[in-house]
Image (cartoon, rainbow, N blue to C red; front, side, top):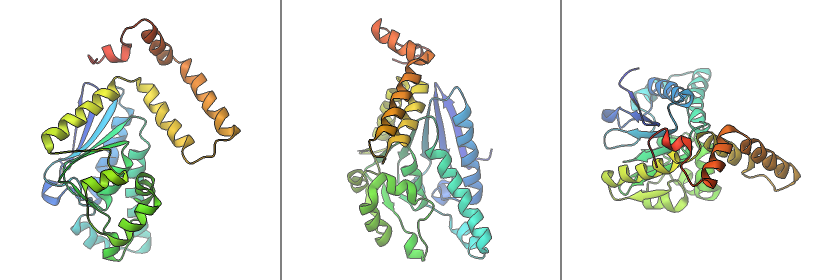
Amino acid sequence: MSETILTEIDKGIGIITLNRAERHNAFDDALIRELSEALVRMDTDHDVRVVVLSSTGKSFCAGADLNWMKKAAGYSAEETQSDALGLAGMLRLLNEMRKPTVARVQGPAYGGGVGLVAACDIAIAAFDAQFALTEVRLGIIPAVISPYVIAAIGERKARRYMLTAERFSAAEAYRIGLVHEIVPGEAELDEAVGEIVDSLLANGPCALGECKALIKAVANRPIGSEVILDTAGRIARVRATTEGREGMAAFLEKRKPNWVSSFGGG
């Protein structure tokens, strides 16, 4: 693993850090590949229960790297599609991780950087973070990131910010649903991320994965017999698991469940 991506695991927390501060943590094919590999490792590592995505330097992620864009300008249609599928695959890995993901946004996020934020389950940003979907200014479109961005901010807001390519503030990102919380600076950002992570670690690890799958299965579907049967089947199955039985027993016995004590939390 190169220094482009830094990874760390500490007491159930997997931290993935984009480490191209001198390039504003912009994407190139190497970063996309290494980030994809890091996401797979974190998702399959039993010691990891929560994943935090962060960056070094002043920017969270400036989107596509200029040198990569120059190289890609000469690509054939087939090469361009292959490149796009690499980015799409990485975002899908992030979006579909079984473990909760938290974006720690300390600075600007543009283009694909907005896609990273939107693909995480929870996003917390510093007040001075800025956001923009700038693709149309280059005569292209935010195609690969669009499913995650539209899911986060809705079609109506996407029409404005994808079409104008204007920058918007952390306060606006909070208002439209791209981020869940905004804080004054990096010290407060670390504190806020830590509080969210502590809340996540207090919950059943398998239940968190099941809850993510539940949200995906139920979102935007009519409440009909199929959904009702599916949700009833899910709770029946999960309640019967070892974790489900332990959680209910811990609650009734007024003690901490074993997944909290095993990581020294609580």
